[in-house]
Image (tube, rainbow, N blue to C red; front, side, top):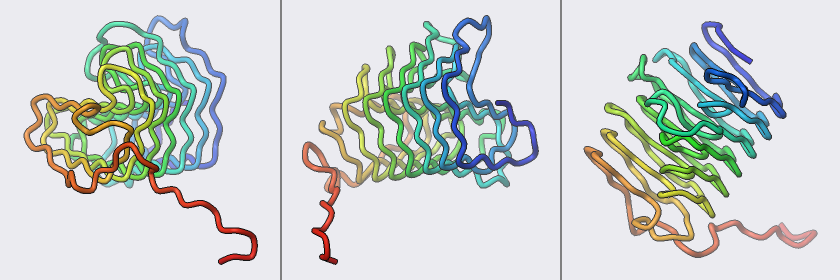
Length: 232
């Protein structure tokens, strides 16, 4: 599906079983070339793409909401190999606003699971570049990247990101989270089975901060058991 309207809302849809692996150029399951608006409560699973992630978002105006929430993005593959440039990458989702660097995206309450990219750009679960990002309350589980950023890759001059309250578990690649050439990144209140220095790598980042005293490592991510019947 390709969306070319001024502003779009895609809610409660399912995209699955698409195969763009044989294309000579980039192929995607869902492709946005204009302002997104809202992408919510969708299921994107079991797709095979060439060069880019299953969901690709290119270029959004600064006036848009750009809210991505409540989605299940799992079992997607981007089978390309090698380096295809900063505009390509990701297994589950790619957000690249290189033409609108002042735009903002909130990525919250999503599940990125069992996604894969063979690109040397990286970002098995999510590749996010050249914009302002708030990445909250997401689960990054069992994602894989041949290169770096098995779960998450943040990239680009002018890029800012607040990465908070996410779960990173069992992602495989050179680094679970790779952050390169960004301006300002705040990374705190996240959970992983590893210490932060074991799964987060930064390169040429102007400012990287976060409250390390609140990092959670190697214990339950805090999911409470349901009460017994009749107990409130």
